[in-house]
Image (cartoon, rainbow, N blue to C red; front, side, top):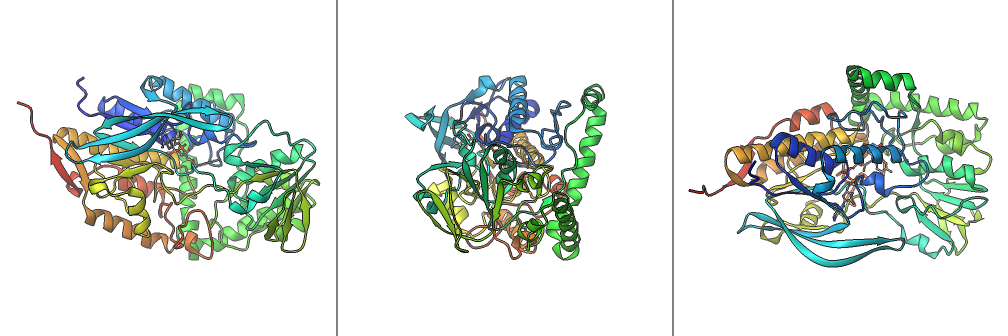
Length: 505
Ligand SMILES: Cc1cc2nc3c(=O)[nH]c(=O)nc-3n(C[C@H](O)[C@H](O)[C@H](O)COP(=O)(O)OP(=O)(O)OC[C@H]3O[C@@H](n4cnc5c(N)ncnc54)[C@H](O)[C@@H]3O)c2cc1C
């Protein structure tokens, strides 16, 4: 088939792979994927800390078009997720379509040519990080920005004064030996929850510094038996039903987040009961006051973990809630006057989440910077979370407005890709060269989303990485995934200004 459109995809994680596969499957077009890393996997390639796993059930945290009967666990470890993504990429021939070790520095929309000019440079990775080669320019009619929401590790400056080993969970160094060390873990988010039980097994002493502990809920399942895996592989319909059931249960939970007045108190009672019962059964009643949060459930990401409370209840683990007052060369001092000597400092301090696209600069019509445009507006404006006014033929996957607290973002990425592919299909059918979402459509969509988010639990008495400096929740979708699917199920090109292609005679 004659390929009229050149399609570039930045990113080889769940989002980029999904876009590449659906463009190929549904439109019969080839794509080019560009990824700065050495292989597919994205988040799951980059994060290698002990205990790293998804916290949403694997059967929904995977592609609907590539179900995997062989997930070993309810929440599978990163190695398995990476292996899954790589096998999917190989199945669709995407290794041959990908430039690895290639970082996109900038993308410029060239109005006169109706093209994206993408500037890349080769990245050479070593233990010290990356060094870079010459830049090169690539051109695409359509560009997917699938660079991931969690990319740049957040490393607060205050820890620079520590002279011992410092390691961030997102840049793990497996050569650091934790055996018999005094380890401090800073943070209480998803990475800390997963790393603490593993590190505590090795460390002599583990100090967990928690400003705001996480709400912890029960993990429903654990390992799948061989019999279940065989049943799923022989009768995929069973696996599909199982996945659907999990999806429905998770999606109903959205009301804890977006109808906090009605449902949050019920959730608080349930989570409090679970945490209290578990800590009591572990003979650590003393931890109840320290670990049961005082903010609404869901404000920060909820941890569904079987082993976290067991890990933190170990004799060699100490929970410190007093804020950190100073970091000395080999110790941490807290406001209650405690000073503890530390050998290894683990920063489980998450990511810089409001600087969308990380160092990548995207310039739309008249050289408008996407970063600046999103930052200046207070709330990053998009249409249906996928397209952006003045950035023609750009499709953003898992950018602002599409994160979740209650379900799998892989399904969100699939919905966004469905919408983008429908746009491209209609462009091809109508001989349209570029589409630019009308300003009023984006305005209306973003204002509604902003307003809805302001009455969710994420906007209540809590500080989280979902919010920007103005306290606005920008990362998340406000409703259920089912409603997102409905919103993105098809595209209407009347929502877009269109530039028609000149017909070749
Ligand atoms: C530890 C951890 C656990 C998580 N667990 C869950 C979970 O259980 N459930 C859930 O829903 N979400 C979870 N998430 C969120 C997770 O980020 C998403 O689920 C998902 O992996 C995002 O996929 P992505 O493809 O959009 O981005 P990523 O996986 O981040 O992939 C982006 C890719 O883009 C590449 N890239 C970025 N910038 C450039 C550039 N300038 N040039 C070239 N390439 C570039 C990167 O190298 C990367 O390969 C978790 C995140 C982390 C960090």
